[in-house]
Amino acid sequence: MKLKTTERGFTLVELLVGVTIAAFVVGAAAMTTITMMRLTPQNNDWAIALRQVQTAGYWISQDVQMSQGEILIDPAVDTFLTLTVPRQDPDPDITIDYEFVDLNGVQWLVRTVSTGGQTAVATDISDTDADYIDDPDDQNGGTLTFTITATSGTAAVTRQYETLQRLVPPPAP
Image 1 (tube, rainbow, N blue to C red):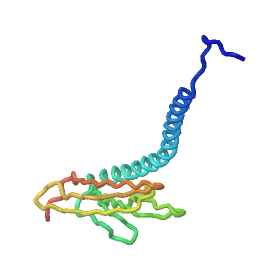
Image 2: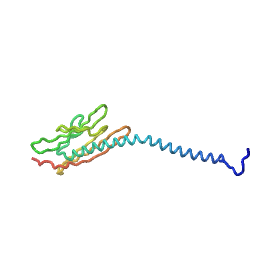
Image 3: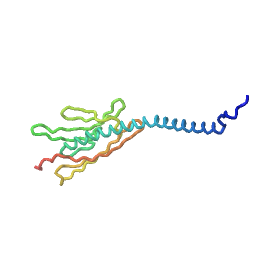
Image 4: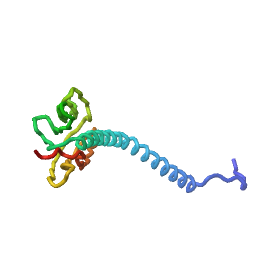
């Protein structure tokens, strides 16, 4: 069978160039897909840990702003922080404890109020640190600086907060 001179096919070089380009495109698409499949769980772990840290920071900051007087750090074995919120006489002051509770192998930060309320604030808190500085010249009380670390899967997120007490302390007797 003879080929006519007007009929032309692909040369071997053209076929090799086409296959090479297709291999690069398929390789790039495969690498992108594998990277996305690997990073999605890591991003999810990071987002979960960040939300836990932010939630704990929010609750503690709100309670510190309402508290009055000295803040106790690590006053008991499993308690991270104890705050006192003043009330009008004859009502007793409210005490708020932040303590760690282990439920089925999961570390929870639990907020317990002396009036009977208890709230699970955050989970997977792996590390905490706090420092309270009482400034006697400042009428608004002291400053609590605290650091919270949450771990979810392979991701760990640490945030540091600095919160000032807002209420004016009672006058000295």
